[in-house]
Length: 169
Image 1 (cartoon, one colour):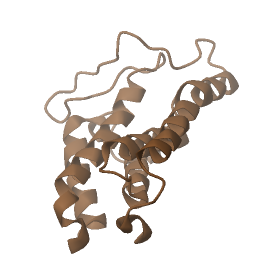
Image 2 (cartoon, rainbow, N blue to C red; image 1 turned 180 degrees about the vertical axis):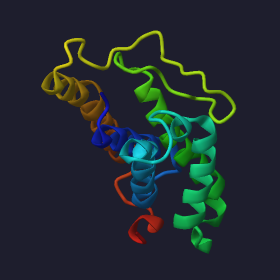
Image 3 (cartoon, rainbow, N blue to C red; image 1 turned 90 degrees about the vertical axis):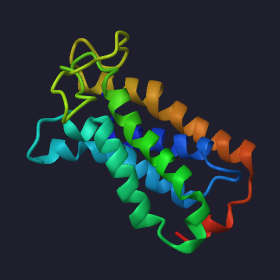
């Protein structure tokens, strides 16, 4: 069961590795928030959980909207297309992690065009006994800690200094 913290960690790591050198902290933080966004449907949004907010269409629209909101300043002009792609990958990572769980009915990757739900063949996430504590430990070991390690490595390997855009949070 990927937690919001794990989804955010994966989004942050994706942004840290897919930006130009050195990674901008602002892009990483917006990607982390974007990776959590699909679970808005869990909190009473008027659609089924893991439906349209977990789709490819939502990832595309969400990435464009987030880019227009958070990176509209001229200083981001040359990087907007790449940032949109990074945010789209962060949004899509959420659905992919959810498709790795054993306890779900799947994810509607192609909503609103299809209500067919998909799960990956390999579903290593989720405790078959349903123990919440075991699921949280598994999530921390399998998803969150590797994401944090990868994000740390990205900043270590790709440049210690933050880009000039990073300080304009």
